[in-house]
Length: 279
Image (cartoon, rainbow, N blue to C red):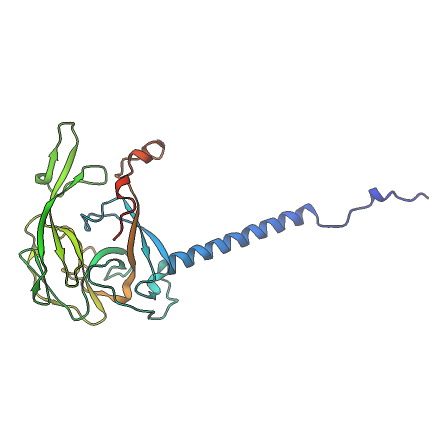
């Protein structure tokens, strides 16, 4: 009988399958940690949002992408993905200031993200008279500014043909009447007044406790707190608990002319001058 050479004996240690299993487990742990980090970041620190409508012209165009900070007004279930009911009521709650541009869950469904400007705080009396904003019985100063000019693109169409002007080179642009409003406290911003509409003259709205009065800067093209809360319609008074965050900075903007299969159009479609604009 001869001894079996050492090199013929099975080697101790992990099998190839065991090594692959370990690598898979480590990769899954990495994915879980990454997902947890992203959820915490988006829920409590900052989150991206895109603009789908022209209700906040002139500040926001369709195709704008912005970052919204989450800590300014406290946290509620609406701070979390899918509005998961993991946070009771609202913690670290703080009221916004008049003039803040905020993202919130729109009544009555409290499921869709809207972005509007805070006009009235709890106890304020808000009214429109012939297109002029009144706050607590006093007219909010408004001065005429040069027209807003926005190039017509796949993302931008003029509110009505009367506002569209064609250039010699065949391009077209929208020219809108623009005004600057200044709220009590000195916060100024631009608004559009496009036509005489039903919401240009309203009753006096007294903002209830725990609620806010929101308006779009594009006054004749915004379903906001001037209209009763109903699906497909206005939003009425917005509960403070529905706040998601405060708009901070525009990080990208596209005119909608890009094609996924034509990479160079990703650059030609970008509105580079809008990137980095703050609120």
